[in-house]
Image (cartoon, rainbow, N blue to C red; front, side):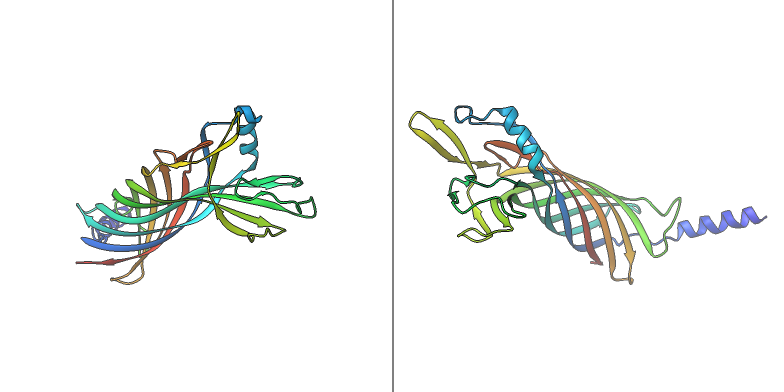
Length: 268
C-alpha cells in the first residue's frame, strides 16, 4: 500500500510540473575562456624561422584569454518539453601569447621596433592578445531534462544544441606590458603582420580576417523560478568555431567555454 501511495504521489507531481512559458525573452552575460588551436603556419624561412621552431615557440607561450559574451534570445515552446530558440549576440574569443624572460634587443613588434631600454630586470612580460569580436545569430533547439524522472524544487534543467552564423566585426592585436612601460604605454593596439624576407629586405603584409563564420554550441542550463514572471539561470556553454579567425603567419581557431548568467521573462 505504501508503494502504491508513493507511485500515485510521484505520478501526480510529475504531471503537474509547470512547463516553460509558451514564449519568453532572455538576456544574458557570459564570462568566457578561449584557447588557441593552431592550424597551418607560414614561417619566414629566409628570415631564419622553420615551421617546427615557430610551432614549438607558440605552444610554449600561448595562454587562454578571458572575454565576455552577450546575448538576447527569444524562445517559443514547440511542445511541453521542447522549445525553439532564436537569439542575437556578441561573441568575443581569441588567446594570449606571452613573452617573458630575456628582453635585451628583443623586437617587440614591427610598428615599435627594438626598445633600447629593455633589459632583464625583475618580473617583466609582454602579453600579445589576439582578440576577435563577432555579431552572431543563434538558432537552437532546447529540451527539458527534468519533469519526468526527477524534479528540482522551483527549478528546471534544460539542454540546448544550436548553431550561430556570425559576422566578424573586429580582429585586433593588443599589446600589454607587465613590470615595465613603453613610450606608447602599457596597453595599446597594433596591426598583425606577415613578415616575408626578400632580396631587398623585409615585406610586411597585414593578416586577413575570416569575416563569416559559424559557431556550434551546446549548453546545459539550470533555471530557477524566482517568481512566476522572472526566472534566473546559469548555463555552462561550449562554443566551437567551424572556421579559423584569420589567416596569416598563423591560422588559428579559438573554441571557448562560457557560463551564461541571465534572466528570463514571459511574453505571453
